[in-house]
Image (cartoon, rainbow, N blue to C red):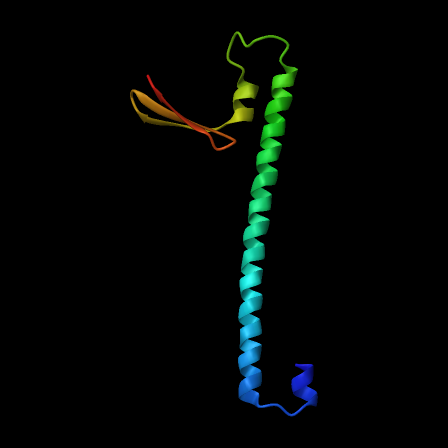
Length: 100
């Protein structure tokens, strides 16, 4: 813009270069948003895994019965697909299908 203000330029050429720079800026800005989103996803995943390991470390012995706290720390969701089939989605993204 400074060059356009101080030196006589063809406004068509200037606008063309300006538009190309704006397009490049928008592309880089979009990519940065994607990278930041991926970073946030990895940070959340790391926190979930850390919570899982902390829960495991608190266990003194092998699990002899259902542990609700451990369940909440490692399981994202459980979907019952039918009377004989369910899927467990863990917080790390792993999905296990169970046929009963």
